[in-house]
Structures are given as C-alpha cells and as structure tokens.
Length: 93
Image 1 (cartoon, rainbow, N blue to C red):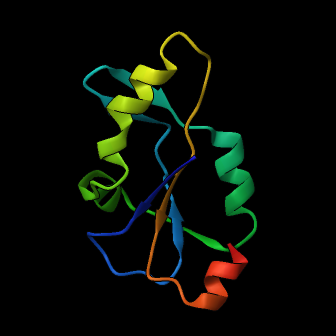
Image 2: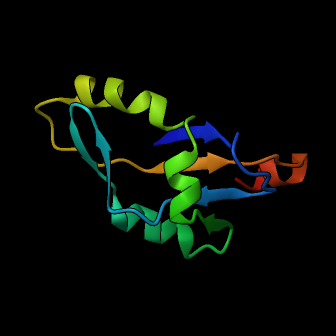
C-alpha cells in the first residue's frame, strides 16, 4: 500500500486507481487488482479518474523508490489517494 494526500483535487474520502499499472522511469509497477476491487466493493472508496491519477504527485514521488526497493521481487501496488477526512471518516478507514 502507498497512501498519498490529495493535492490536486479536494475530496472527503479516499480514492483508488483505475489503472492496471503505474509507469516509472525504472519500469512499470503492477496494481494489485484483487485488493483494489476488494476495497472498492466496500463502498467506502471512490475511483480516481485518469486525469486526477496522472496529475497527482503525492503517490508518484514514491514510485521509483518502491520500484528500486522491490526489484527482483514479485509484488503489486495498492495506491490510495487520501482526501480531507473528518475524524469519523478517519476511523472508518
């Protein structure tokens, strides 16, 4: 999991990617589709549209480091964009 605060859009929830992989200068990082779908099925998460996903930098900045650290291992990423959560929403997530 990589959590990133939303800098590009205002939102009151957490959002999941609709992408199947994130591209980095070091190579692609696959998205853990099963976990993303399981989280989406809870109804607590929205889905980032492609423009938001591409323009948000809070998750993107971590990806080359994640790719380097995980090199040679079988892994998939679950990126979560975190909005301006109320205390009640924080407890829910």
